[in-house]
Amino acid sequence: MQRVNTGHVELARAQQERWDSAYAQRPQLHGSEPSAAARRAVELFGAAGIDDVLELGSGHGRDALFLAGQGFSVHATDFSEPALDQLRQTAQRDGLDDRVTAALHDVRDPLPPADATVDAVFANLLLNMAFSPSELHSLVAEVRRVLRPGGRFVYAVRTADDPSSQYCQQLADGLSAHDGFVGRFFDEDLVGELAGAWQLDELRPYDEGRRRMLLVAMTRPPAGT
Image (cartoon, rainbow, N blue to C red; front, side):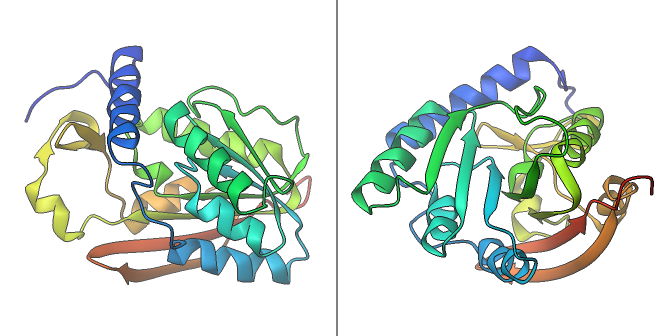
């Protein structure tokens, strides 16, 4: 097993550079169709009467633009400026720039919103990225901090039985590497650990193309619980 410095500036910087390069070399890297998780988020957020969504790890914006097209106001964040430039250009082209804002942010840092000011947070595949366990717990705690009581967090992750895992090099701290990208596959135990201070509303496995995924929907409990 190869050792890697997890949770350190070097790994974060290397991954940011790898993603910047990928987005620059292949514009619209993930295609234009929204993820299955974004489609489910629209249903859940709509049923809860939510209008505004904070998306973390938006990439070039396929889900942010879909959410905006469904009537939500979306504040999209990512740590890749090339990806965000593509998001802004597409939003302007499609007439959605009044519903989508995009800001550069690395979720290893505290989230920008003040406490209890956000109605909903969405993240597709973000939590699979190269985070140490402590960084993952800190991120989820930050999401809980910025959500209002009763606010919703919907995220989707690739699972440990994803077929691509067999081609990955195993690193320390539960991380894997392939083609210069480093990340973490999830199982239900890890979801349960991260959901400790939440109301877990939905935990659903599904397939998306060749990916094996878990959709997780959680609610921040009322204050004092």
